[in-house]
Length: 374
Image (cartoon, rainbow, N blue to C red; front, side, top):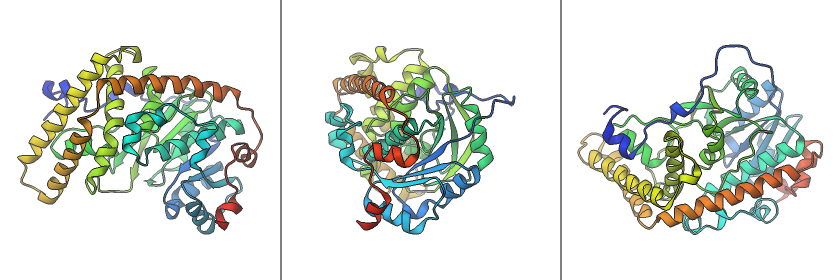
């Protein structure tokens, strides 16, 4: 099946690569990277980020989900001169991170890890603003094969682009449904996202909403204005996308929203064009995609255990898709836009407080001692 298939393009855009910019080989002004922000849940997987921060000579911010995770990092990882290890309490939302999208009915249904990763990434941006940093890198703890020279080049490119990402060539970073599409023979592309992303702090005033594909929504404005570039490739630790069908269910609403929004950019449209009728068509296309992939997999005899698990995941995605209405999509977009307005005011009102410790104190983030003692 070719990437240009009219049948496939009618209900699924295989690649968003055309929306990304390829930087020229010309020299760009130098811009140092101020910090690497790692929103981690795996305390034992931080060696790559620590080495990278040391080689670059930038700060390292490790944001954990629980005090236990933060305590393990502090006990096991070597300490850098400029390093913050803490966890992000859920009640931090009551201060600077109180969003309408967080209480949207569809988000309440999912109750997954997506809110946790979004919260930590937003805290990373707040810390950057408070420290007066210009350039930071979001780096997930499962990213490998990234060099200091490649990251420095990406930081330099933020003089021309609002965000610069890295394409994951192994293991593909896709939703479960898109993994199933690839398994069925589809030529599924990979959009660089928050797992390895350098951003211009001053020009990236977007928000990571608490939904799957939160990084796509964070990048939406920058992609729309053709200000996201790709600096190279990296690797990601392999995982099993079909191991638990609930993963597909937890991703479904966010995948619908993100794919629908990025289709608008392909069509030269805007968020204002995401009407009730538009989302009805998006949901119809999504159902077509899931059924199309399932039908292709049912005709496949190879690798029967994986095919069976993929079919179970598709069934879970289809079940989760069924109750999502066009109204739910419209209301989420309205809530997201309102959150963006409030978030931008929050960012503008933040002071520059000095160093990383002062910034953490300003946000009431737990101190390292409190993480170790819990």
